[in-house]
Length: 159
Image 1 (cartoon, rainbow, N blue to C red):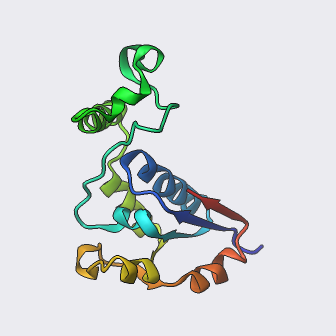
Image 2 (tube, rainbow, N blue to C red):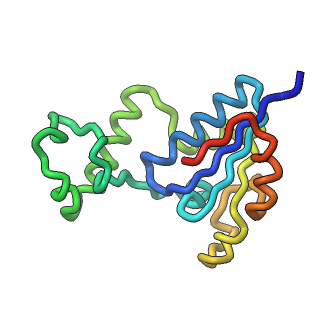
Image 3 (cartoon, rainbow, N blue to C red):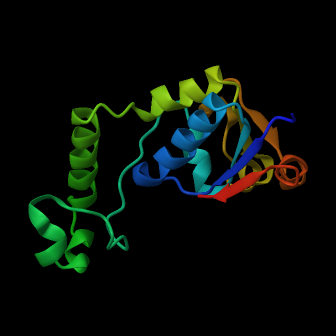
C-alpha cells in the first residue's frame, strides 16, 4: 500500500493561526502520512528562530473571550491599544493551563517526525528576509516544487 500524503499551505503569521499547520502535520506524520508544509507570505513568520507572534482578535468575531466578553464587548474595541497584547497573553496562559505544547515544541516535533518545512523562496526574496532568521532544517523552494508534492497528495489544506 502506498503511503498517504498531506500537503499544507500556511499563509498566516499570527499566534492563533500558527497552531493548526503544526498540529495537523505532526498528527498526520504520526499516522503515517508523508507530510509537507509550504510557508508563504505571512506564514513565513512561523519559521523564524525568534517567534514574536500575537493573537489578532480584530476581525475574528468567532474568537471566544473570557467573561463572555464576546457577547457584550464590541468588536471595534479590540482595536484599542494594548488589546492585542492582552489577548495574546490570555491565550498563552489558557494554552499552558490546558497542557497545549508551545509552538517551538510543535515545530520541533514536526521536524523530528520528518515533516518537510518549505519556505517560499519568492516570498523570502520579495520581503528581503534574511535566511539567518529562520530555523535550521528547512527547505527553500518555489510554488512549482510544492505543487509536485501537492498534486500527488491525498489531502491538501490551505491555512
